[in-house]
Length: 115
Image (cartoon, rainbow, N blue to C red; front, side, top):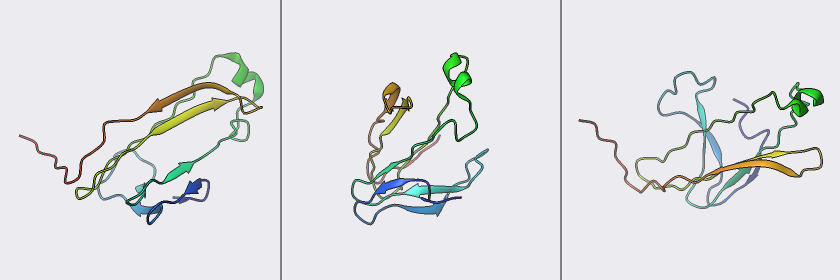
């Protein structure tokens, strides 16, 4: 809904755009998605958890879970590769924990078939 406003982007090819989803995503608060083009594109977002309403004692308590979710896919007529990297940083930008996912590339002209 906010487009790329809160993101730092590095455009490749035709760059990033925001489009309406081609298929409905049940439960998603927004039915839009980020779309990149035929070359590597990157987007980065840094959230300050205190600015988001959490307080230092809670963050330091160890009694909180911070959850991130994401989904990705390719168009039917072009392949894609996607990497998700999430880092938990302290106030000095030191990495406290991290998660990375790099799923198997989706090939061009992929088709979903159900029997």
